[in-house]
Image (cartoon, rainbow, N blue to C red; front, top):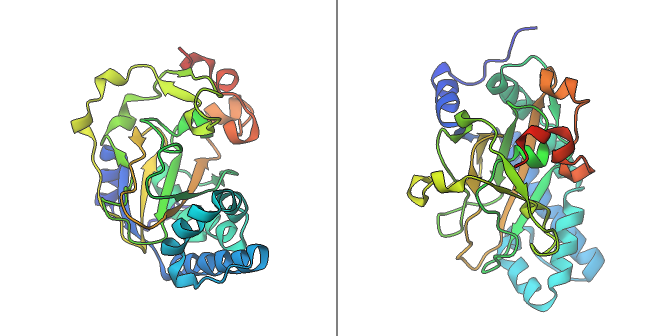
Length: 271
């Protein structure tokens, strides 16, 4: 079986160099995003008796959160299981492009599919500079799709990243106290040597709906603040290389989400 060739050699080379690309999505994925908003509207009506138009979800969620923040927390958890989300997470087009970028003939879909609902002004759940690998583990050539559900301007806070940082390899991390970080799994680790990465090295760009960022699992990136009056909604989908030897030799660790401690799977990267 030959590798799929959906991207031009020039784009693949740019990904190899920068560790990230902005890619337009096919219409099938844009339809699934609309289906997600419909499922959110249906859930709010059936569970909380709140009538919302699917087209106004980003504007309405902050208003609902002001009156009932726990309801949005429950939406965050259940929406990861919505059928539209599951269909996006194994989309054939995403899978083929991922295989091309990872240069593998067989990809695996990560169990952890994350829907982010970042409300205006909330900082608690924003992530400091990090690599995805300690959380997800998987393969060293794995990648993440960051797909916004609405136009995400710089004011709304798309992620920022350090171009080419994936080429420096896995960064050693130290564990942080779970309680002290507000019981945030995303704040379980901290890169030990962050001093080498200055703020002015970070890049970020607006991402329009219908487009996606796809980046290497070792790319150093961070969350940014949402300074608008809308909820920033996106999905994060990850693929690994099923043939990667490091995963095979370690019995395919599942990552933090399913309880595989990074210190056990990859102790050489713990400071």
